[in-house]
Amino acid sequence: MNNARPATDDVDDDDLDGIGVWVVRDDNGWQLGRLSDDALGSLGDAAREIRDLRSGGAAFALLDVDDEFFVILRPGPSGLRLLLSDVTAALDYDLAADVLEELNIEPPDLDDEELEDTDPWGDGDWAILEDLGLPPGVLEIIVSETDLYADEHLESIAERMGFAERFEQLLDER
Image 1 (cartoon, one colour):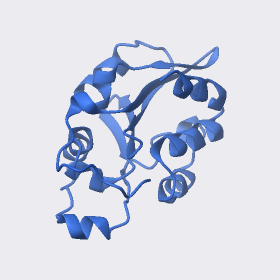
Image 2 (cartoon, rainbow, N blue to C red; image 1 turned 30 degrees about the vertical axis):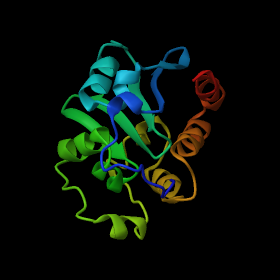
Image 3 (cartoon, rainbow, N blue to C red; image 1 turned 30 degrees about the horizontal axis):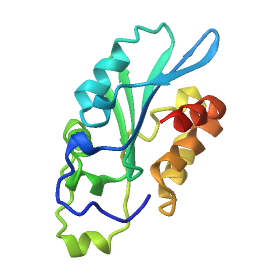
Image 4 (cartoon, helix red, strand yellow; image 1 turned 90 degrees about the vertical axis):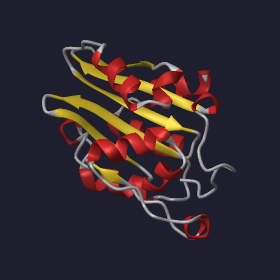
């Protein structure tokens, strides 16, 4: 993850760059497509789009916001399962703050100077993709690579799970 922060305390959701990708594993293998740009700024919008897929297989979303952080979102019977790659992103981005709120985790209390000196850290459901072949320990290692951008983290996840080629095509289309 990149330690650079936007110039303002809060980023306008209309100015977000990145990509949201839905992923479904069904009898035909991995299916991927793009989520709307609204999914990058709203946890509710992202969750609604995944639920609307009405897939018979496992469905989840990979959200890369401004190449600063990523979110893995997976609806389940007991609610949303979530992983946020950088808890400190909640200080600047509504989506990250929404994820922490859903996880019942307080955002870090850091001023701008402390934030500059703090390495990012992830939190949430580390076993979110375990049943699909990505062990929690591997996901933790991927997130701990703080010299990578969010899209590079997600490419690593896609590679380990077996849908890298289609994921990279979607990244190239943005």
